[in-house]
Image (cartoon, rainbow, N blue to C red; front, side, top):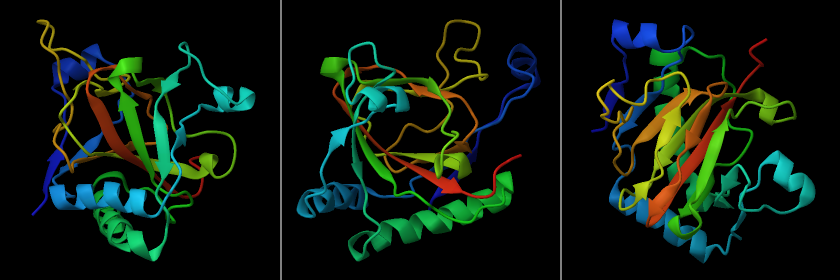
Length: 215
């Protein structure tokens, strides 16, 4: 059974952070070790090409460099029968999480999920950004989620702007259970980042759920 973790801040922390704080919401243990391994093996068997994960700015020039906001590799997860088990389970968790937590008007996924790889030898990372953009279907993104695939790496933390990163005494705060199979949900307009991976390889899966624009 998956456990649902609501991430909350104390009144003191809220006062010290942004006055307009949108909270992430974590569901722990949604996908088990077998399913996460199955995902990686299926992507290999279906010969889905892995490519460089580019920001819109990098994509405009067709490459990226050491100073790029994003240093990662991506593989699109096909919406085919081979991956129905993944999308069906994800749909169910999205439905219940949105109903109980966000209440957004959602219509579904207009883009496939993306399997991401961040390497420590190039300090894989993604600087602060928001998933919501100006072009279709990006402009219809309303709810974002990240699935943690592994935990045998260092660095590579998913962090959110407006939330305290330490407790005031130098102790780092992780705002979600950092365990494989955990899903972290957050509004697509929320600024977030992946800090540089300093050891090993970080794998994750990102998904966007779409609906009528916020305004």
